[in-house]
Length: 173
Image (cartoon, rainbow, N blue to C red; front, side, top):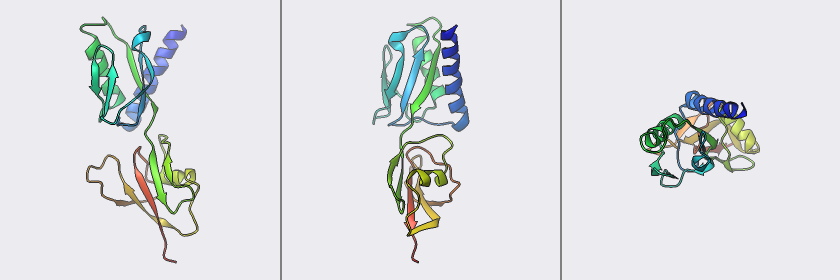
């Protein structure tokens, strides 16, 4: 009975994350792959490498960058089903997201651990809050998923994504 509960929770949590954000994997993320009844194919913490790939038994290196956990789950099922397992039951969930970065006029600038639902207002609190010279109305963002890498202005209610770089500017007065 306990095994079924674990499998249900693992499947439910990965589906919830995929539906909630449509989150796409990238290098620096750590994932959990659970293959029911196959401990040799189950990994509690598999880091997505700088090349955007993971190594998985029987399937070799798999490109995972840009895929959701649900897409990776389906890729694993499709890869194992024909030759290795009759009816593979697999769940993929994100164990740890890649960090985001806050720099400029905050008390503790640097990389911070991402949490789903995080806004810029909360991220600034995690970075120790504003310094005395901080401009509390204008913030610059370089989004990790923006191929141009251009800075754009965002507000305190902006929803942080892993890999984002936020700059809190100083004020002139």
